Image 1 (cartoon, rainbow, N blue to C red):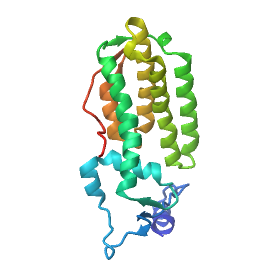
Image 2: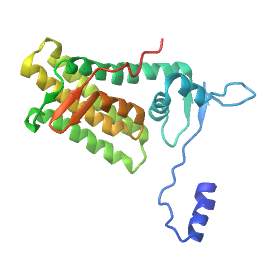
Image 3: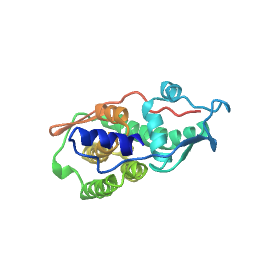
Image 4: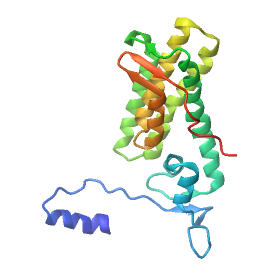
Length: 222
């Protein structure tokens, strides 16, 4: 009522432009039940943030709950999603590249060092991501962004940079860093703290890539 009637009325009275879209999200249940003080099943988001970080909670709510539908929260589901996407996905991938990249950092590179496959992967995923914005499909946008991490992970597994040296190692680190940087740009609206940490570890400065190991961004939840 406020956003669909009262707020537009205030805007009209002030002579300001009306919104063209109103985003209405669903409800969050706990274990399939409505949150209730009587049932004692209320989840305090502040407690979750203090223990696991704001980005971890954002990630779960954005990934597991469709923007306009109801969604369910349990600590079991949260733990599973956190470990699979954040610890094993982002945390592991960034740590692998940072560990290897730090040994040859700073890396001077040119545009020719970035493969056509890397560019095409970035462009294709970026195009898919942008097509979802107008429909406010936040969960799908985040899922598309994570395709970059999975692509980089597959690239690392196939090229095996831990057995490479010299220019061969440099080429792999440059392309993996390129995909990770593209990923950090796409997730910044969703996971700003995580994006900032990634950019601090893998920095593109002019024609150089500066890489350093950091703390484990997402240690596994046991």
